[in-house]
Image (cartoon, rainbow, N blue to C red; front, side):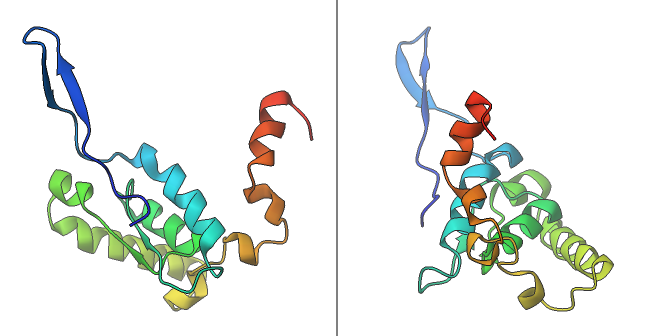
Length: 135
């Protein structure tokens, strides 16, 4: 797994001991795996399964568009229960129907670097340009 969450710890200032930190992902953590799936999709000879930061249909749709073959919902299930699986599935299906997309093949990889007319937008250079204000 490329984006598996490593054990994180914190420090208890009163006891001067290590303690477990918050272990569940949040939707704000989607950016890193989203970028790398978009960069790798179609370039590696393996399926890409999105993990970390996928909590709802919007996150799942983004990962599929980037090129993920599957999407994992772990923290979302701990936080919202098993019903979140159906909610995400139904939300992605509704989003697809609104756009005339009939199958996951119509979605998968559509926003990957490989399918982009502007592949340079996926590269690190864009971060530097954005930070220093160069177009």
